[in-house]
Image (cartoon, rainbow, N blue to C red):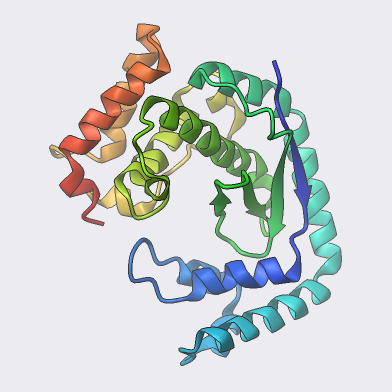
Length: 258
């Protein structure tokens, strides 16, 4: 079975600056993660205080990223090596098991999946080219981050095969399809017989989803029950997608309330 290779690289300063700027901008929709960034980069928070001009914000983020990378160049090289080492031993088995479980093949044009070892303490993924960020600050999380993001890519590939009417923008926040994906990705990693052996701790979805209740229970409780039932049933993954999507649409109002 064809599986891609994950290539870990250091992002360019320009890319770091763009991602920093994206997460530091005030968010009108979706989840505001600026404070997560500022916890690791308090000096950047001070530099951006009161800045409302987009171009100025970008200049500040670029200057900050450039300085930070130079000052911590040895640490970045070390984090790069640690991320590579932490992933290589599980790559082939995980990717093979993932493709078989979701019942879809990796695209033949995705021979390499690029993982950026980033100073941004949030881990975005880019669906258009199947690239994503992993952690500079905590290389020990490489397995869970890499598994999570690649599962997103494969899950959405399967989703579009099952629900081809889905608009591409629905695969990102704040849309309902995206919200379901964030919850179900961690459910799969926590409950799949092989995947769950790869991590010391349970994977936890966004805190926003942990605060809401469906019929008196957290959403993840309902989806976990459905996934365990699916594992016992031996049915196709497509059947599982239909089941969770029906449940999600039924409770759309609650899931879109955060």
